[in-house]
Image (cartoon, rainbow, N blue to C red; front, side, top):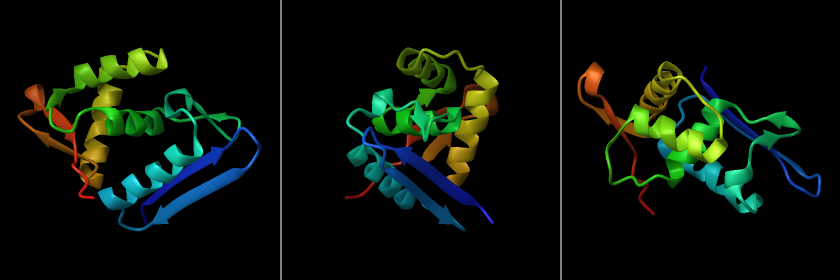
Length: 126
């Protein structure tokens, strides 16, 4: 059964664990990330959860929330934005794999052929 789980420890030591079991919708992911953003003063600095490094997948999800969901972008531009934000080099196949997973989860849309694939965050209706 699929599971989406986020753990967060605040500066004052409070620990929050949020998880969703089963089919995960984009709305659920957005709600979980909104809760985390409200707990964190600065999501850009959120590289650690409970003393452990936040995963590349988790940081990519946070990054995609902040990128414009009106623009279609190739994975290479998303990789460059990731490097600028987190100062970490991630190989393009890793970014592409994670984007494909996020697409299957409904968090991002994708279009185009394999060699010219473009992505954008799914718009959240408020």
